[in-house]
Image (cartoon, rainbow, N blue to C red):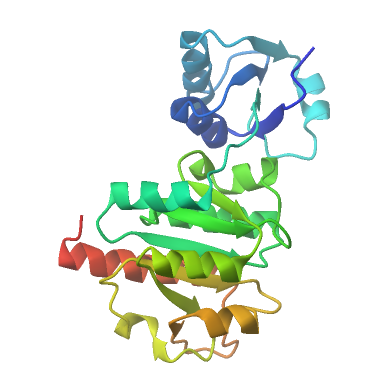
Length: 253
């Protein structure tokens, strides 16, 4: 019998990163029978090294079991994702870098978008993410897959009230910048030389008015095209890169 808190992860990168991060227990690995491709074999060997049970299934059975997933011939059952309290996230961020950057997501309901934002955040040097417990996609196998395993490395805090969380961040020394279409200044003019929390809204409504009012400054992304907008995942990547670019130029550690 598998534990009741089992959490399915599928795909080479998500499974490998979950094993490497060692933040949660892996109950078993499931693979297609037959000669495994080199990248899958490397994950199998990692699991064997950690004495994790491996269950080979005939290809037809495996395909049927995970027919709606982009599985790459490998999946695993893990314990649930562990989040932090906001206080813990703030403390961990300052331990990592002198001028940390956190991201607050408001109304990201699409798990693919959430996964893509998590991937960009981890890859581009964001120290942590804050998510509201209501109105946000749950952390599931789709989020893990779309994050390509980045979710195993990016600290995340779930909160009840984003406005109250912003107040707490300000008390801890963070400057809060909302990313909106009608921002006060383009993102490249903003100086990322303080601890900063970036607020990014969902595609439909963007950053809600009350949250926007709570921001110290609002930033826009200059565009030159007929559409005039980016989805939340693309906009996040642009802002995260500008933050990283400036800190690299300033040699902030």
